[in-house]
Amino acid sequence: MQMSDIPFGTTDWSSIEPTVHKGDTGHSTWRTQHFGGIRVRMVEHSPGYLADHWCEKGHILLCLEGEMTTELADGRVFVLTPGMSYQVADKAEPHRSSTTTGAKLFIVD
Image (cartoon, rainbow, N blue to C red; front, side, top):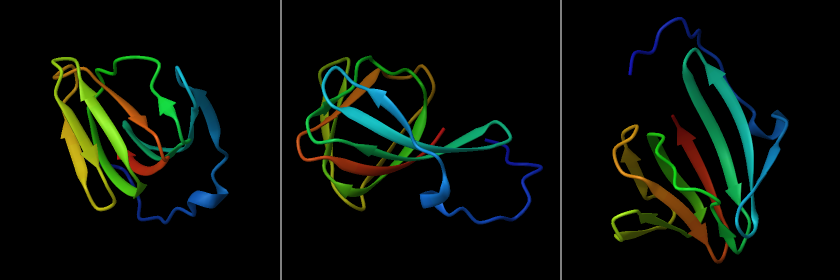
């Protein structure tokens, strides 16, 4: 990833207008900033959330609160708790997320 033409700045995530994205069950609330071609998000999944698609976008994801399960299309399953992260490249391994308790995430893609 090349990061260029991004001046120093701070983000008050509470001031970013949220957007709501429905899952197969539950919903996800995103607060999104763009810095050049880089999308940065603070995401909160509601309890009972299950993504409505298999994602092929690459991400670097850090779990801040709660617990999130990520399932890969090949059947592997990973559970993230606060302080854990994952990374995956674009079109590398389709994945989808779910949570029974809810989760707050910081995502760069």
